Image (spheres, rainbow, N blue to C red):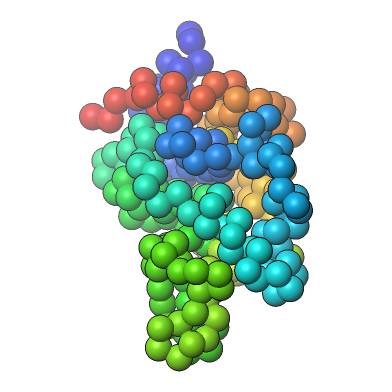
Amino acid sequence: MADSEKFRKMVEESDNIVFFGGAGVSTESGIPDFRSVDGLYHQKYDYPPETILSHSFYERNTEEFYRFYREKMLCIDAKPNITHKMLAELERAGKLKAVITQNIDGLHQAAGSKTVLELHGSVHRNYCRKCKKNFDAQYILDSKDIPLCDSCGGQIKPDVVLYEEGLDQKTLEDAVFYISHADMLIIGGTSLAVYPAAGLIDYYRGNKLVLINKSTTPMDGRADLVIQAGLGEIFGKLTVG
């Protein structure tokens, strides 16, 4: 039986599925991934992206941070792809209980998913550090230099988890809850290299752990099914009925 067929059968037989995804979910929507050969880490900047997207760099070089952030992180014209759409359909059918994502692009919600746990925050939420007023991504995109609050003049910060910052505890706890109760865990488009997110796999207790990624991951040996392919190719063959 082909891997895609095995996957389809597993999905068919499950009714408490959790999907845990990384950058590879959104690359087919034109959003660059960080670690692939043509990803952001292999492009040339004055500083490595990992440095620019750190808390200390944000505090020290806020204007430079925003120059990179506007150019590379705000892909607000991107549209959900087949994977986002199929996950939303699986949720509507009552089979998928939660999407846990490392992405900050909001495409799961745009596709119609309701229960989305954003481990690293979202570019669509930004707040004034002084008065806490909220701003959308378009406001940041249209602003110049360092974006300032139009009410109090305070500095605006994106609600994304930068390097050196901790993940939101409540989101982590919810992710652990969903994964530990799942009868099927699908992990897709992530190298499983970033902790604590990658450690969430340890909470899965079932026997339908599926890893879909173009390259190998450190967790391949633990999976019940490993598919080395693009997510669109695999999710494009699913039917929800």
